[in-house]
Image 1 (cartoon, rainbow, N blue to C red):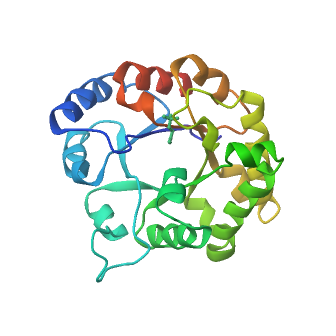
Image 2 (tube, protein in one colour):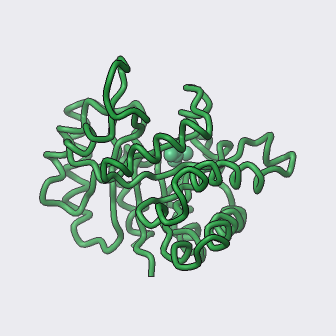
Image 3 (cartoon, helix red, strand yellow):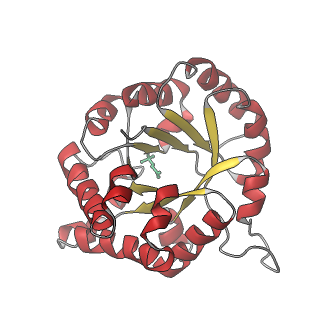
Length: 249
Ligand code: PGA
């Protein structure tokens, strides 16, 4: 039985006052949940969020990480720094990082490895663009993104990792993949891992992301291979995020 995970990706949103109000409500109302709940604030708020969620059921994650352990990389943040601030998770390969910051499959795989070396659990984001879906390339693109990581770290590394399928056309658009569309890709991801190791595949949590809202969360999370969600916009509204967590419960 895979324990469901709901992770909030705040993207470049937040402010000290706003964060504390948001988390006051979430930590109070999430206390009885069985599913795991994580929040991924921007770097400067990690320390604040770390202290605000102390003693609650929430866990902490970051949105990106350097592939380098330390050194002359101005503006970058290493995995050990994230671990220092109590992060358990870190997103790698979010589509915005791939599209806007030039992160290739190779770089994403290096970040994945760097995260694990520091004891973090990477949440590997994969997903196709609308053009790729319309061209019938969804399976190929997602398999390629996953292979880049499997080739680098080996299938055993997936024991301490999470995968998030996020169709790019569904992120922040209000258009979500149908439960059947999402399930199809999730099953293909699990099958790709199962071809290398059945046990690892059976335990691997695969999240769905892309316009998850309270109204569609339950049906998505009810699919056989959907083990929770990566939530963007709705993670900034306490009532919505909590309703999504409840749907995963
Ligand atoms: P969204 O974002 O829920 O706002 O579509 C999801 C994500 O980018 O992780």
